[in-house]
Image (spheres, rainbow, N blue to C red):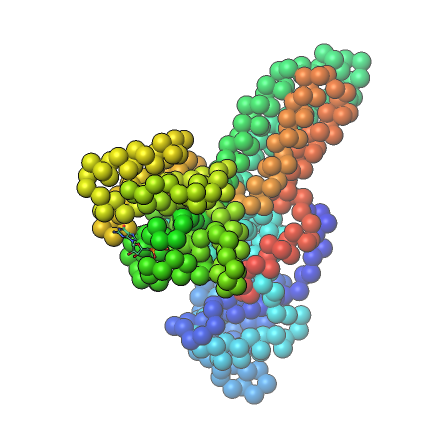
Length: 471
Ligand code: GDP
């Protein structure tokens, strides 16, 4: 982090509450001049303006220093560094929530010396640059703001509490311990061979480094699902009941249900929660050759959706022989997770329904299969159960495992694992200690990237620009 030690030290200010009228609106100021800025504008109802006590609210007015005109009735709080969000002096002004009045107060603040408007995420960025939080926690703040489900929120909170960093710390420590041994061997070249017990160190790396990293990586997919929602695509030839099934799942009438093939011209996407897992269910226009242009666009979009899907529901019709089109559709998704859904069971009497299911199962022997009726709702519970099981891999999220890596962490973990494996191979093959040290540094580098020990200005910009102003 040394390269960022001299970041811009200006005092920054922004409206921290969202635009629009609210019960209260908050302006946040951070930096060395925060208290001076406040003192210039604040007229307390009681006591001297200079009598601020850290972390205590005071009541009074914001007054335009030039005209002495009162602008808003406020509560203000001064929080002395370092026990603050940014680890700098922080001031918050809680005014009436109107946007015009907040803009006016902000204008008075920014007219002061050495203060400028904060950029998106800059308060959180300072918390990171000043060492209060690591990068995973800064990202957790963003996840928390954007959480779309209770589970997603729980994940963000655990990460904000440092869950991921705490998991990585012992891994890093284990690598540092091995590095210490290797460095001794470098310093005493004659005894190098006796100092390094390659097989034993490699075993230690297996337990203390590779296994925990592997587990983190396994959780990454789950984390993405809880954060962003898994995508489930409904695929099937025209008229098998895709729109009807989507509607029944949603108990909603958004998809237009018709008996004419090919009328669902575009993909329709809806959000749904199954056992606390957020899903995006997508009804495709059907992947078929067509000459009609509008449908062609829909089909191209469908193909992309299928490629990205976490699960494909292949919808077929009970009591109908498998058509070439069903098999072609199946072929196009062979390498994905597929659940075969046999629809329109209500059209068949129970024994025939059983035979129809068995016939479709023979067609797709390696796949999970469920019979439903989009019309009556029969089989829906089992369908939801299977969707959940197939996406989560049978494991409900373990609340005790309080951290789940995001895509950025995942990318670093994907790089770290082969680096660890190469290091292990090097240890077993009695590689020169100098080379082992290089391998070790590369593993440590990948972990450092995750917690933000080593990170480029570009990466920080990418992360923090996703925040809103005032956060
Ligand atoms: P899509 O082209 O695959 O989206 O199919 P639709 O949802 O538009 O349905 C095609 C036709 O099948 C419509 O007439 C629906 O009413 C009918 N249908 C859909 N699901 C069922 C079902 O479970 N049972 C029965 N009997 N008819 C269904």
